[in-house]
Image 1 (cartoon, one colour):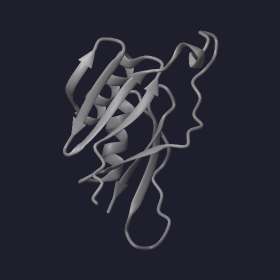
Image 2 (cartoon, helix red, strand yellow):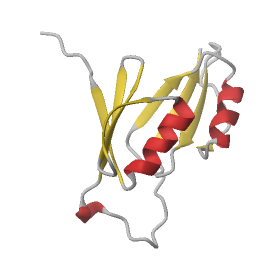
Image 3 (cartoon, helix red, strand yellow):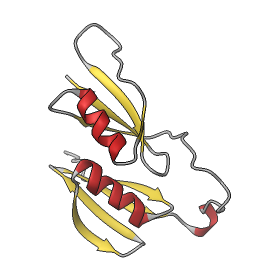
Image 4 (spheres, rainbow, N blue to C red):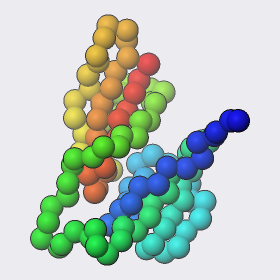
Amino acid sequence: MKFNLNTIILFVHDVDKQAAFYIGAFQFEVVEEIKSEWVLLKSGSCKIGLHKIGPSYQRKQTETVQSESNTKIVFEVDEEITKARDWLISKGALMKEPRSFVNDGQLFCDGEDPEGNIFQLMQR
């Protein structure tokens, strides 16, 4: 039996704002959409669904974005990671400085989308 990963779904507070970020910053294309409720975005063979979070999980207007997450989406970049980082900052992402864990030439750089979901850039 073979299992193929098809879609990862993120539950978000503002579907439209999140979709605009991922489309503008990462050039995802829209596959399907229910305005302000659901959008399915595609990049290569990977899809991300943005689903409006349920009412019991809605944040109050006075609450700030939470940057704690147990999920991390990783994007491999095909150019200098610092250039990709600068691009994402210009699109509204909060970005940390690039770093490496071992001396194998790989660089990593963590960032946050407008709702605090963590993503990472990876340069091999």
